[in-house]
Length: 70
Image 1 (cartoon, rainbow, N blue to C red):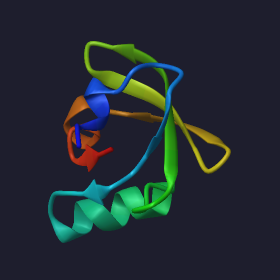
Image 2: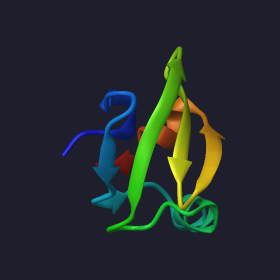
Image 3: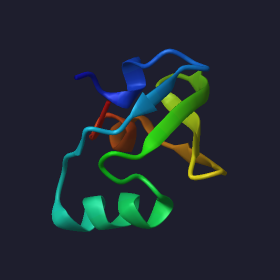
Image 4: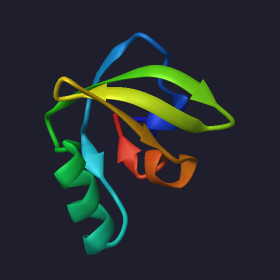
């Protein structure tokens, strides 16, 4: 289990756990980051990520990406 920031670009990963406060978890859930779901890192710049999740492309900051364990 690693944080999403350490995942390789182009590799499909399964979300194992979402950490952080309740409001953070709910925010990520609304974006499509749910346990058991898949996420693919498209690109990375300084820890900030662009990912594909549930057929959508989403940009997330390094702090949020570190809370998503794959």
